[in-house]
Image 1 (cartoon, rainbow, N blue to C red):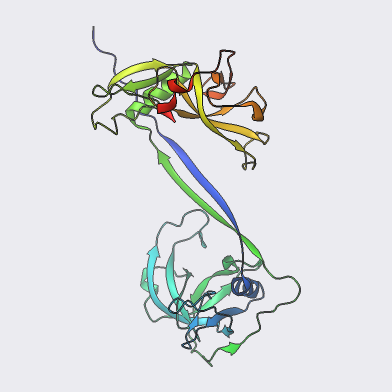
Image 2: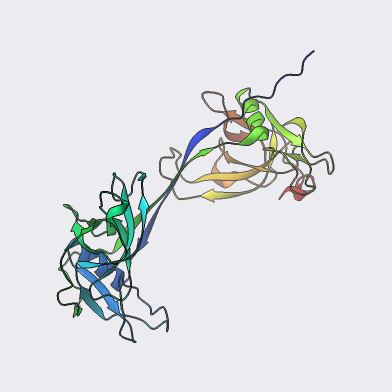
Length: 321
């Protein structure tokens, strides 16, 4: 009988997002509020250099900086790189150049986009000016981009500025970190995922140390040898350790507080992650015996719940903490 061919390795698009909310100090607050008001601010160091974007501490002496100045909306390209295929969320949807621009009156360069018809239209030393966004909220995107400019610097001397723009300063921002890529779990985890679709949890045993890895990794990270022997584990297991989650995650329809735990499935050589349900969060404990509750489509355990067995003795799972 011919051997069964291995399943096709799975691939799927994956998006990792982490919107990070941060508060602003007085210098960054003034800089972003200024952008909203079409004003470009830098900060002067003890040595007299003007830094744009401004920072709150001197990068050379670490001295606190508060001497704000206004610089020009025109500048000079110090270096550049052509971007032929803009990604979602970038400043322009058509091909553009990433440029470092030293604004008139500044001693450092600002990174942004230059709207140009092609790489032949961009050069180091090129004069450019700010193109402001039609709607401004107090973010770096208030500068829509830079565009070519034929004029000179005019008066490059920066003017002192108090950093005040009325009663509505920008005091915080949300940085939208996002990564789009295609993920392939490899042959070992592909077999694991196909097993889950049959409500089976399948790991792989190391032929050297005999540890069973779930999810399988294709090789033992300790012995460095391939883990080719498949072993079905569980479905029940033991809570080895856990944490109580009190902050609700975006797009996750689970009410807080809830418990997220390490669960050592019977027969596995290490614990995997899983949510604990079916029990008040303050009654979850180490050694609790649990069983899977499968998702509505039956493709993976949605969470684990107490199975009614007596708690496991600590000595039976202490090596899996």
